[in-house]
Image (cartoon, rainbow, N blue to C red; front, side, top):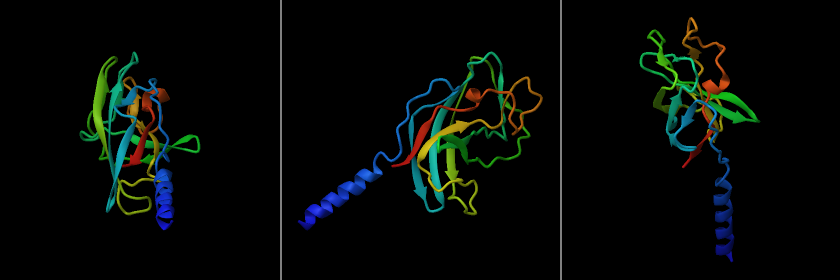
Length: 174
């Protein structure tokens, strides 16, 4: 009898952890597409890490500039919370003194975002902003601009949101 209670408890706890992060369907509209829809997050003594492979395909008729901070071209992560997209992790960037990476119309740029972050409130940078690490995310190019813009700035430019974001994907502990 005690074995049945233990086994039932084990199954309930195991099932509670499964499926707590929803699956997502591929949204083909954004110019940035991740190679997978689900990526594993690893826990470490000092925080968390994940690797998100993606391709930015310029399907517009204008060249798009991505800030190149000493060969460091990285988007930030946004988390879907309460039906809204909010910033959840910013890469630590060096000064962006170099020329931007220009992606011409019809061209592609592929890379892997190496996400390494401390827990919220820690003295480790970069750090995740929220306690919940698992969830539905997207990449966000906060320093993207049309090549005709005079400067690539952190401030929003007239570039369309679909050009700045990726399809949704899941980060989950494995």
